[in-house]
Image (cartoon, rainbow, N blue to C red):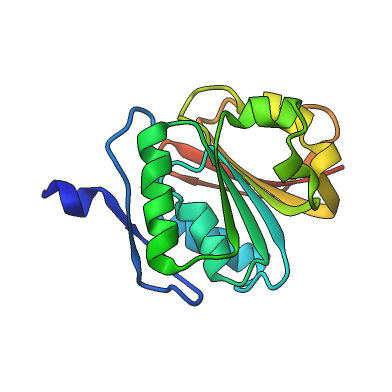
Length: 187
């Protein structure tokens, strides 16, 4: 398989449907599969007009660009890997995605510092897909509530070992291969 094809993911819905996003080889970077993204956005509704979304650990950008393509008013994408961040910026420019704000930073540190970019508006959807088996999900879930609107959704990918912190309930769940995914809401 050619590297260029292997390091691409396509947007499956919205205004940028069928557009390809390139991403670098980076340890722990694995885009969310098309079928999983399709299921997620079927659960949430195909369009997200006016939504404010936070994509922590953005990686390839598959989830954040998908939300932006489907009409989200604002998507804050956070990624700490510099080469992945450069690819996200290139994809943002290619798509002329002016509803995306890119932060090249550590997602957990950004939450603990209550960074200005996170305080502008509360979020309707938070996407949490850290490097597989990193166990950062529970930590992030404990930090999120001040940044969320009432009734907000949180999408979490994990290896099946996620223990939900108190105050969270599973709204929907699924599995694709080794990856487990949940859509959560505050209880």
